[in-house]
Image (tube, rainbow, N blue to C red; front, side, top):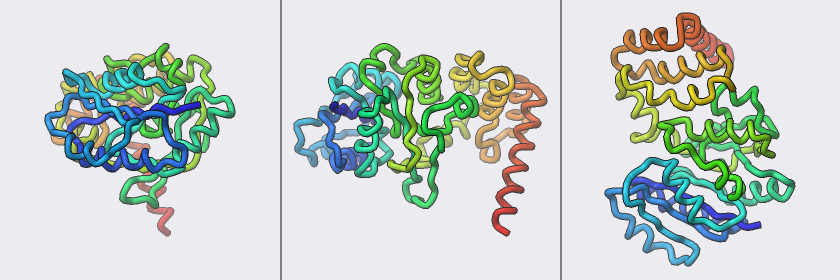
Length: 286
């Protein structure tokens, strides 16, 4: 069994150097490493010149189509049995591919894994599930992003990433794999480092949005409305509309938007849940 690694990147050559180095330091080495540049304006020449390895292929997209377009390009360019994805700003720990390999040898078709926050490694995110469950998925992506995901290439050729989605691409993929009855396994230990709150990350972009622009971020929830059911659908919609509310301007307008789309009950429950979390955190400090 051989791994193809697909690293997607956009205007972050400095981050790519670190992520690529982490792949080359794996205990289990991949067959190939495919870097798909989503038409960056920054040059990657100086970074790529530091790596003299014939397994590395750099592909620059002719047009910027987004992360899912880049990932699908990587799938078609690869020829390993399993494709492991890595975002350019995250880092794998040396044992990452070894743990994934163990799961595939035991019959897995797709795998996700836990992580630590890069720069704050004491903060760990691990789902205790041994396999992906609906009870976790209806609550959102409680597993990991793309840097913790791998799947058999033949499976990804059958069901590629949804290029129409603006966000929630990882969760969408996980739901589709679950509904397909795939042998979808979770490694419930932290084996990669996730870079939280980039200046050009999702959180920063959402804070600058206007309430009228939020519809484009609701595509994955609407796509899987039947899977979620009414309660979890409205809850997910509300969470996406009110995400990072304290950092947004026009807070009242955002709350009105949540009520308009998700209803009064879901909006009220959002704030009650926030209060409960704060109280729980305070009690834990005593």
